[in-house]
Every structure is written in C-alpha cells, then in structure tokens.
Image 1 (cartoon, rainbow, N blue to C red):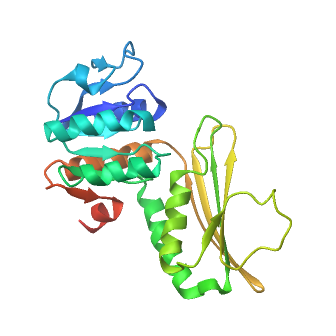
Image 2: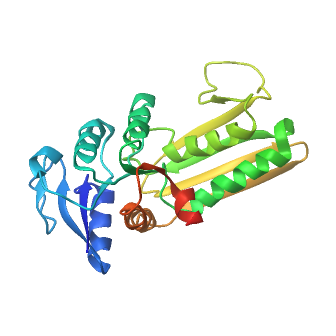
Image 3: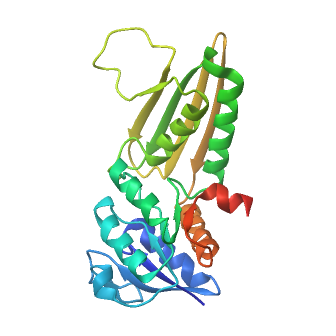
Length: 250
C-alpha cells in the first residue's frame, strides 16, 4: 500500500486527487496538509507537516508556493520522496527544489499531463526546424480563480523553445511600447475566465504560413492521474530530480 501525504488537500486539485486515489488499488491518502484543517475529506488534515509528524511513503504537493519550504524541510528530514506540482514558484524556490533533490527523490513538473509534455517536445522540435525565421507566440487560458500568470506550463513551453533558440527573450506585455515585434521575442499571453481547465497554444508564424500546436485539458482528473502516477513512480527511486520526461521514458 502506497501511503500518500497530500499537501493542499482541500483545494480543487487536492480534492480531485483524493477522490481518484480512493478509486485506485494499492494507494491511499494517509493524511492531508492544509490551512483548512477542519476540512472533512475522509482522512485527518493537519495545518503543517510538523503537526502531522508521521511517516508517509510519498508526498504530493498541490498547494501554495508559501508552503513549499516547510514541506521540503519535512520531506528531507524524513527521507520522504516528494511530488511537487505547485506552480508560480520563484527562482529561489525552484533552487530549493533542486537542492532538496540532492538528498531525496523529487518529482517536479509544471504540468502533470502526458499530452502537455508531448506538446513541449513537439514545440521544441518545431523551433529546431523553423529557427528564427518564424515568430513564436504562446497563449494560455485558465479559469478565473488561477492566481499566477502566465501559467507554469506556458513558461515550461517557452523555456523548451529557448533551449534551442537561446538568443530569444520573453515578452509578456506589449501595451507599454509602440514598436514592431522583434525577431528574437517569444511572446507569452495569459487569458483568465470562467471555468477553463487549461488551454495552451504555441504559434509559429512565418511568411505566408502559420503552424499551431495546442493542447486542451477537459478535466482536472488528468492532472490528478499524472500526480498519482508520479507518486507511484518515484516512491522507490534514489535521490535526484525527476520530471514527466523521466516517467515517459521509464
């Protein structure tokens, strides 16, 4: 039985993960971590990992960036593998994730969808083929409750393209300037509205032709399934930093 400590358990994604885990054999939510410790979810909820004080086989984090440091401190001190799904992390927090992976196995991905990670590979390949002869724009759309913008997935896609086009830079807002688009730009735009689960499109616009690569999430369950798959994958791995590419290649 894989015993999971779920951070952010009373949030939208936390509840979906808990419901999906209950349907899977061989895994269960042992306890939850959330500021709302009164949440009734079928397992005990604690305000912090220190309050939990027990031992889990793996941690899944779908909470808030502010909770990351305490969660990783607990994971490292207990030798517990961690799946970090929280987005909107600062550079210093990402560095903390990487340092923690030197001591424990850490699965870290801006998006837990297999399809999105395939989109990343395809976008990178398109950038290699098309080069800077094509302008690159990334457009993402999410529900009106999402706090961070642009999404972590949009930045993941931009970073993948930047790897093969290193002379590019990101542009998030064109309203403050009145000038033509530069050839070395990667435009990143965010849309927030309604109950949109998650949509990402990478546009390669060239002379007389446009290539569009896109992914549309229909349900939060696909992200929950990815997180649970990552938890099962990483539970017996040695210390190191893992991502969806690791899971795909396994």
